[in-house]
Length: 85
Image 1 (cartoon, rainbow, N blue to C red):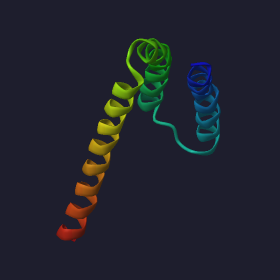
Image 2: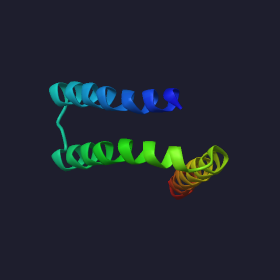
Image 3: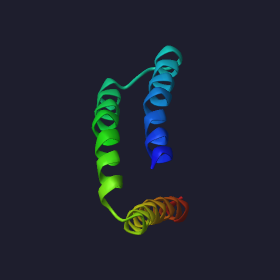
């Protein structure tokens, strides 16, 4: 349990540092910056609550299905671009 909370707590400083470096070196989309910050600010505490209440097997299944869906979508887009080129 402590490892899960520690890993989630590390997301915030990593994201802040990444945003700072990106802001100094490239052009920053402020809308995307605000959305990402809001998602992190709300997502980390919400994720901690969910992880404490949900059975770990169900949580792994849900995350696996989400990742499978994202991967399938990305593969479809890549193949669609390759075929249309």
